[in-house]
Length: 403
Image 1 (tube, helix red, strand yellow):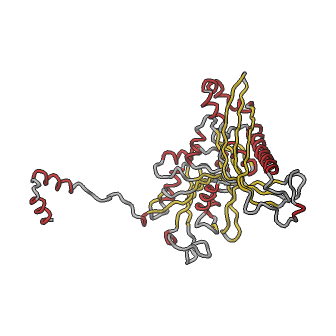
Image 2 (cartoon, rainbow, N blue to C red):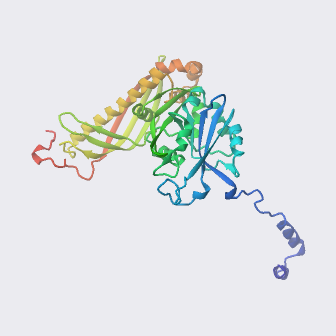
Image 3 (cartoon, rainbow, N blue to C red):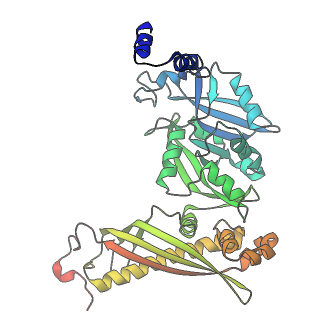
């Protein structure tokens, strides 16, 4: 230090400049409020169930410190056969109260930064989720990017599950959401839906499948529909696909067709899709035009159709468009006519284009939504025919082409 000071003085740096610089070094401090990893109980998933009396039962899934970084063994944990996660449970009138009771059971501070999933029990969902998701909006620690599900039974059962391909049920819930085979909703998106013009929401439903001991997997079983933050019903997986088309959230779709005058199926894999909602009000009639453009690949051909024939491809594209429209009309029947709940984004679309007209019906949107006429325009393009375009195992004389 003395040598450095001498060199600085030799270079002509004045005492008037040097003294303030040295004084500032005393203001530099370390991370005085740092929390070591060994002091944290890391939350990986959360479950909320209705308690026996009043309030809720909160279940937190934590990463098992002894298994962090270890290889997953035959028992679903590390090489020692220990479980990769542990769960703690407590009751309370609020999430924070229940969490404080769980904290009393732990020697480490609860850390929310790695939470991956929020599972809400069906009974809680029916009574209303707003009081509980409010915790995640206000508290600074939980992640708004965590995925939300409604459990068919007790939500805590989902956290008890030991998946066979993932370290924990929290991990498998995250991966299922990323695959987007059904609805995929984060806490942030749920909050936005509850505060949208329609005030409705939709969450994927999940069911744990136990196969041996606590091992098994999670299955998406459809979608829970919410009105005014309370679950009022649900739709199955097939209807959910139609809802995803309408919401422009379809990312994964496998479709099979059996064209007329032939035997077997042709399977298609969705590459990409875009849905545009075009609201229209004319002569007092509210109409929603749904424009869909999709692209598919052919991945399997069990028929005798020659797929290089342009007319056959055109016929298949028309059949695919009809299949999409069939799914959408099925969804409209369930959501618009039976559940009478706008989880399709119609309210927001009308509000953006016709703000004055929207203001007049905002308080009566539930009734107005039932009157909205829906017109679907779909166009599906087949982009690739597959590695082999000729029907396999079919004699040449039996291959069908258009005349």
